[in-house]
Length: 471
Image (cartoon, rainbow, N blue to C red):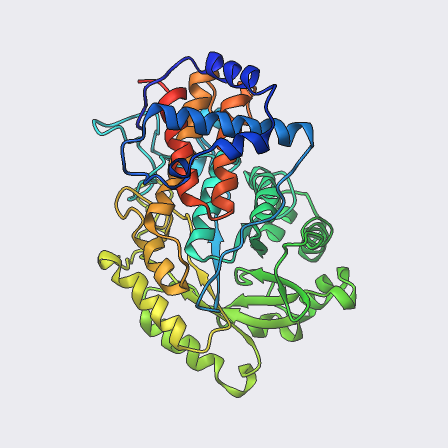
């Protein structure tokens, strides 16, 4: 991570606060020059302009605190392509700096992120490396970064991989991480849904947490009903909550699913979407099917769309699948042979192929498979290997006005949050007990990104870099 020159941050902020006591925000704004708001971000910006911006932002911060102003406007993104796009999301990562340990999805059985190579990269269980380094799913800085990147790429929401409501294996940690995302999702105006892993119901019985699989699944769905369906951002289809199942692979009797679904009142019974070819196991509870990644690649896509046009499926919900590659690290990571096939990224062509295929066929919406499954190599979040390539391609598809430079601004915000937190207290996140004032400037950067005022966000980042970080 790039570290920048530091001035005396505490003194600088104190001067701003003292000097602003006799001036209100309106009078300060009248004195602001046009050049300060329109200067190009790549130009050399004089210290006087950056200091003036910081002083103005201090007044905004003071006003928000004194008047208890909270920005709840969301982030309005205009897309010229109306098709909805949702990212399949893995909330299963832990990092030592945030959680106190490295989670299994970075280590698998034989990798140690404490080992750092000559290029500064940690040893992780993946063929690919996140541009921000391995992270924690529970970190609010990470969530802000991921969701800003999604919004600026035209993504409409997130489908969380969800392993039930109980505390065994790492499932409760994943559930808690999922729930820490809710405020950030709602604040940016992203929708979300749950994709249930029905094997967790079988495991619950095996481990003594439930008397039978039907009861276990019912308890999981009661939790979803009471804790997730109540969110104003929970995904809807035809006026009802939209719920996914990865399979089902273990509960494969329509009668069993009939019993499980009795936990939902009829008026709020979810629209239930299974993996391709699995509707029959759910019976009348099935609303549709979603495609996934398969070793036959585009052949599987062709079969899926043919299958969904058959008379028995003609009215079913169709969810297309878009992915950049498939390259499982399971064998190399010591978890055994999970898949013995690969789909190569071909410099982004695989992503384009599946995106075009889904677009031209009659899918109701798109599921990006995935945002961040590093273990299977299907991630589209920025990596050392591909940078912003996949998100840039997605921006072109969704028709947003944002650019890769805007994506870089959100990434710079993440890096600065980390740098400022470490400089102030040696901590890893703004959620820790560190000095809040500089982070409030970065909160203002977040505010400007939400409002689409990208130039102002970039210049404010430049000011924080110059005066609040160190070499």
